[in-house]
Image (cartoon, rainbow, N blue to C red; front, side, top):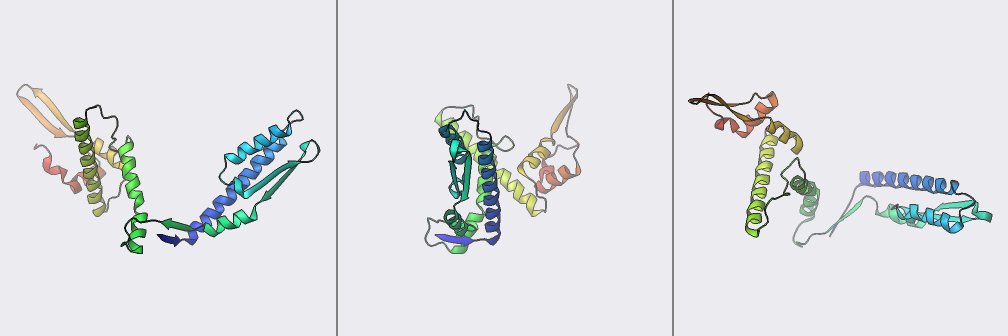
Length: 221
């Protein structure tokens, strides 16, 4: 287990907590101000309780309705709970299943988790290599389809790696849009005269196909 601390993260979490508390207090005051004489105390408390249940900072706030005809609203921040939350801010707890890993290795893998999460998004999103729909149902065909998707994902990441090495960084969506515009067309002039050409490309597309070495597969003029 590794525990890290980041002062910048703590300040960010503190600002977020303060903003959420201010928002929740404003919502409670608004709900209290809108209650009518026909409302019972139970109805008013249920309305306020619903607001508290929908917020993840409700434990930091104490709310009480009192007075004759429940005309008074008492709001108070739970200082003890707030103090406990502030002591945990900026800290991240990481667990590793391999006890021989060093602290640096654990932190490095944790910071690289976004790459893994982005890869899963690529398998789900329409701008990447979506696994679904598969249009096949038998186990053998699903295994082949899964293998094809993983292979395509590997090729896609290798393409991005080569582009980054050449100093060209592009998101999955942008790269796919650029590659979609590069197409091979077949021009049929007559039954005996057929020509294969590649569509005109932008300077960025020329750079991409040059880095990836795709020009070697272009049809000869």
